[in-house]
Length: 260
Image 1 (spheres, one colour):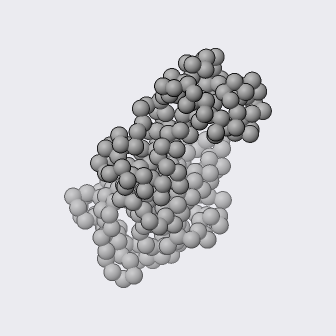
Image 2 (image 1 turned 135 degrees about the horizontal axis):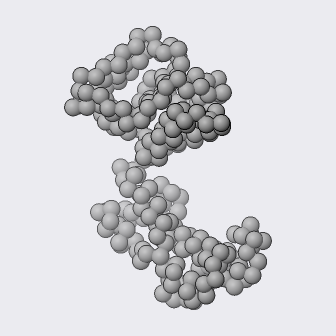
Image 3 (image 1 turned 90 degrees about the horizontal axis):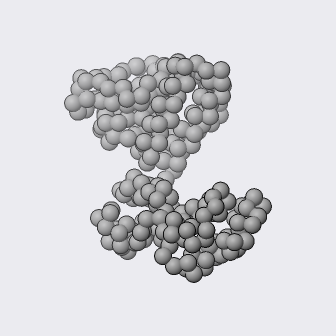
């Protein structure tokens, strides 16, 4: 069970802000920083970059302060006996970098909304949101060789899947990130386990399947809508990924979708 004591996002404090609770809270505290800050870790005050998370268990000393003109964070204070929190393999009292801060920030906004509105299914919603948040924190904490371009790569992947029909090429993607083609291919594959051009192909075939199932476009129209200039090239890639021709896929969409 989760019981939120207090939650806030985009909390902003002045440059003289200090938060010092020697005996800690009687509940859990989870912070997501938006600015650099100084934290007391192992008896020493250390400066940490923005977009860090830090989890304090009940009764643990809490000390952090601003180190620039202002300090901003998202934070939640809560009670729980859920094992995904109490036994989470996360360090308590030690900040670590979050590799998808905007995603986590959006979860905080939803948690605050649920806490304030107090809807009928608030407890279930809060539990699910907090589980997702802890999953994202675990992903960040366990992510080892993170590229400095991690956020840019994430945005590139999202743009590929949001706009499959664009004229994606490795050279254009590399130019967008201001890196060499070879370096892009290496870090993209290391980050996502698939090459950037294979992601382009996958995004286009996913879009084609949606058009085949839910729209009445002709195959020729779908080829153009999915960013292909050659219908034979589209047929080859579609069959390689799905094992079916577009026409075969369209004839039994609900049965065939399960196979692809």
